[in-house]
Length: 237
Ligand code: UDP
Image (cartoon, rainbow, N blue to C red):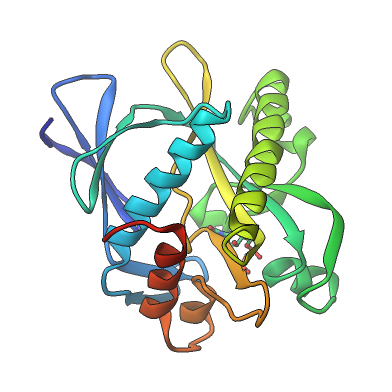
């Protein structure tokens, strides 16, 4: 399968059409942004890592009953995925307090929750991805009631599966962001990516950060952290 026209260029990925109207090729870049694009940089090798890690995790989820957009990895950076219409919601699940949760509610990072939380942001860069609830999502016609129920069910299932998987690698899954899409027949599938760009990973023993917070907070060792998660997942580079 080959790339035809570039139809979208985002912060971390480019998307190309193919000769199959139902499939697109996603190409992962090394570019990194944070704080709604205010901070920019590159993380050497990130594209290759995120592509392979996301594909590995999506296949694991698919085997466990979560439908995803994944079709086939072409090479280090490029993957064929099902063409979807993205539901304009960022779905965030949290197991441990961190980031904007800590800031918003004035609590320290690292509080382990008794049960995961879910929140939605309206995917809209101009507005800075504002936090919304189910009722706002319905009012804005971002998704139907049934779609929101399906998305929540899948998001919590993804959390259960990923949390358990990473625990076995001595990594605590602190929080993460998911995006879902609609297939032409309306079926909801997990889309976008699952990587250290979109998840917070802490070493279970040392609590060392193994994710994009190293870039956001200028902690150094960014490339090494991404590679370390790959190494623990046992993915050959
Ligand atoms: N996240 C993301 N994209 C966004 C916002 C958040 O992938 O545009 C991820 C982030 O990496 C973290 C989780 O979602 O794993 C929760 O992020 P949070 O709301 O704490 O925001 P942040 O502190 O990253 O601004």
